[in-house]
Length: 315
Image (cartoon, rainbow, N blue to C red; front, side, top):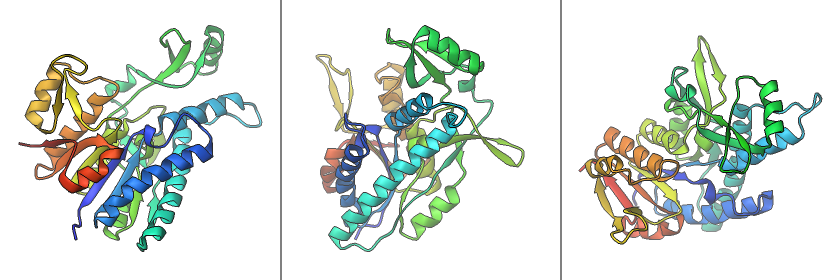
C-alpha cells in the first residue's frame, strides 16, 4: 500500500455552494470529503487545508449587523478563527461518517492554526485584499471614524469595501502539533483560510488585521510536515496558458523554469491562479524530489490512477 504524506489545499468553492446556510455548506463539505476519502482508501496520509473567504465574509457581515455595546463586533483575526472552527467541525463530522462507511478506523482532528507573519511585511504598507460587506459612502465614513487605521476602496461600482494586507507566511505556530498528528496517522485539518495571521511581539503572538493566502499557508504546512506531494484543488482540471485565446494550451507536465517564464509573460490571473502557481513553485523548490499538482476536486480519481492535472516538478 502506498503511504505518502499528501497536503491537499481546498478552495473555498469546495465548501460553499450558492446557499450559505449551514445545511447547504455541510452537504458541500460531505461531497468534498467523499472525493478526499479516495486518498485514504489508497493508503495515503491526508493533511487538509481549506479556504474560508465566503465563510469569513459572512461572519464579518453578521458581526457588523449585530454590533452594539452588548455584543461588540469581533475583529478579523477572531472571525478567521471562528471560520476555522466551523469548517473544521463540518469536515471532521463528514470524515467520521465516510470512514465508518468504508470500515476505516482513523481519527480526524482540526487545529486552529496561527500563521506567523512579519510585522514589516510590505503588504501592510499597501493593503489590497477586500473583505467583508459593501458600504455606501456614508457607512464607509462612519466605519472610518470608528477605526481610523482601516483602509477602504471603491469596489467595481458596488460600494466601498475594507481592504487588508495579505502578508507572506514565515511560519506556522502549531507546526509541531500538526507533525505529531500526521505521524500518528490522524487525518489533520489545519491552516484553514490561511490560518489566523499573528506577529511576534516579545513573548506574545498578536493577531493582526490581515488575510493570508491559503495556498501559501498550505505550502508552508507541506514544507513543515515534509509532505511527499502538495495538491491544490481548484475549479479547473488543468492550468492553461493563453487562456481563452485561439492558441490556448493545457499544461500537463511542467517544470519550475517553464512556469517562471509564463509568470514573466503575465499568463496567470493575479487574484486566482497566480498564487497557486507560486505556491506550487515554492514547494517544489523546497522539496525537489516531490511534486505539486493543480487540478479539480472532480479529477481526484484520475489523479490517483495516473497523476492527472497540471504536475509541477523541479525538472
